[in-house]
Length: 214
Image (cartoon, rainbow, N blue to C red; front, side, top):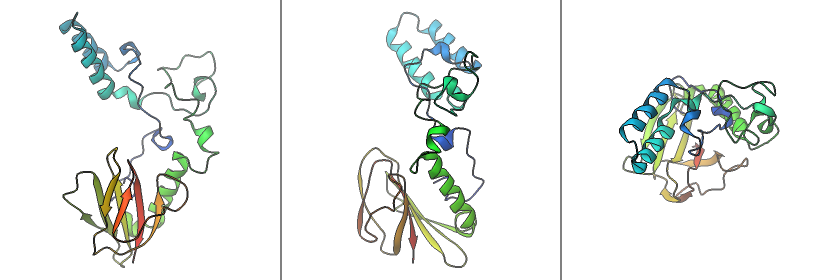
């Protein structure tokens, strides 16, 4: 979605590696943002002794904390994720998944999040007449789970984007006015998606598809 819509594309550090939020298991003491610290202190005071309310407050903290975007960038599978030398304490705890989610691992994989971003950014640059400056047409306005649209350049080059923003498998019908020539990219595998180009298609949970239209 980000690489096929107009406007300035903003990729935050670690997003191109698929770095994730810190897990709910982390103790609130791990958060170092002042807003998070003050919130937790306040809730401990207001809900002292009420385990249900404290559990809820902890859940809110885990969801809303700004520190999710501030954990050290995960460069390698080594100590401190390669962010700093072994024996040096980073300014904030490294996320628990650094051994498998890091730049070193993904640079050696054909179907990594990093490679996906590389391809998407390259496509956006070479197809800027479509994805940066082209027209936008929303498809299926009433759909609750599928966000789909068409981008078209002044010269008539047209692409379709289909995004399933749910954890459910969805059967979605390609609008009759959209003629899909081929599906070019998906986020489930490195190979070209195997989908029908007309009628109903099955869009898997959180699946994104990019197709070329005639």
